[in-house]
Image (cartoon, rainbow, N blue to C red; front, side, top):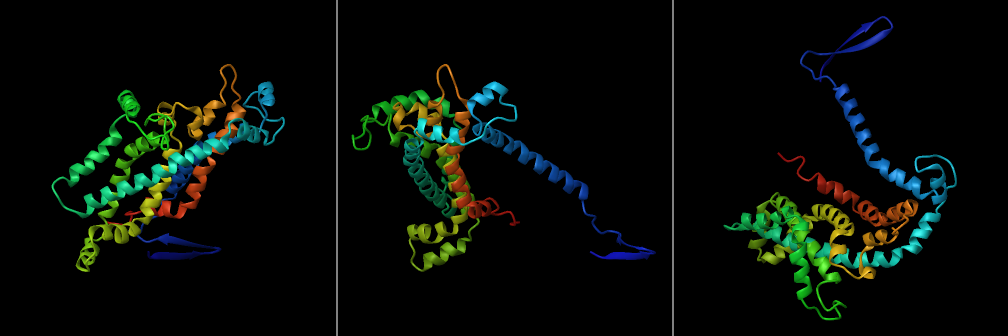
Length: 306
């Protein structure tokens, strides 16, 4: 950008040449205000939950939840950890979330590879079939799915109930079924950006389709896989609907059901529930910060492509 400078006594100014672009300071200031306001809106409930968790129930009962002063401490966190049996339910969530996440990414990556790297008449229809599963309301299939789960037998070493109902496998499978479509759609769009010449060169060198998928395409999809892993871990880990409907044994339910156990029939300690909710949110934060670099790069994939 070319500028014309003029000097005046005691002051030096710069004038923008005709046709040069001016800095949109007003628009930038409005953008900053919007971003700050959005951060406040998103962080306010979390900060309020933390403030409530640090106060004993007696203080909030005496002064109200929207008040300042009293005693502060971590007593609610230790009480929630013991009363809700969080370590036990954390393990239940691990049993459900980790296999569901791995199976979902594995199956969806194979579907995306076939749809994106091979040309045949039904490849688009196949992708639409998997994607359409995300449009189906979960509540619409409760009754037939529940009945079907009760009719499918399983060995006792796989399910203590002897049925797919009330088993870890049942919750894992339904999460895989509902999450595979979204992951297939995202992965297929990314795999289409990988030059086909790479696959053709590997084919000339004698690489089979499986070898191209496993040794060529998957390593290149690491950023988008990390982004999907972060999202899917959060969604599956936070699932409460299917864990409540398909898991009747309370001791086998995931961590989200443990929070419901802290709510009594005639009395609810919201301070205790706030502390437990913050503890439950820790694993999702750990996963996000562990995959933060890959997650951000996965979100910005294709931003600079024409």
